[in-house]
Length: 171
Picture 1 (cartoon, rainbow, N blue to C red):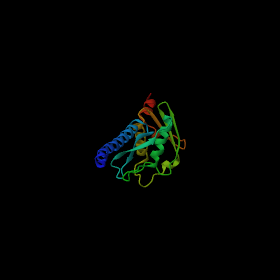
Picture 2: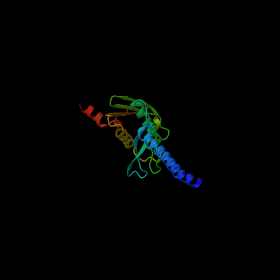
Picture 3: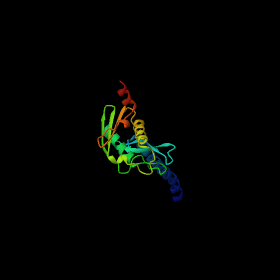
Picture 4: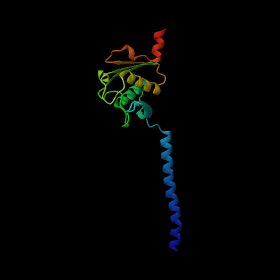
C-alpha cells in the first residue's frame, strides 16, 4: 500500500520542481529584457590590417549622466584600440584624451601630442585617421554638426573640415 501512495506523489513532486525551474527561467528572462543594464552599444570603425576595408566593432560602454561624459567615455574606449586582432588601432597607445567639450551640436576634442606619432601597425595617413575617427563619432552621435579636433590646444586648419564647418566658412 505504501508503494502506491509514494508512487502517485512522485510525479506531482517532479511537476512542482519543473514548474519552479520554468518560473525562475521566465522571471530571469523578464528581468533581463526589461531592466536596464546601464550599457550602451556603440560602433567603432577601425581599419583592417591590409587597409582595404574599414570594419565596425560594437562595444558596450557604460552609460554616463551627461552626453558630454558619454562622448568622453566613447573616445577613451576608442583610444584603447580594437579588440579584434585583424584590425589596426587608429591612435598610438600613448595618446591621452585631454578634454571633451560639447556645446549644442559642436564637439571639441583635445588630444595629447602623442596622437601625432604614428605606430608601425597603422599605415593610414594621419588625415585619413582623423576622418575615420570623425566618421565613427558621427555614426554614434548623429546630431553632432561640427567636430573640432585639437592637439595640445592647437587647432590645425586642414583637420577641421567637417560639413558643418565648411558651410560656415562659405557664408
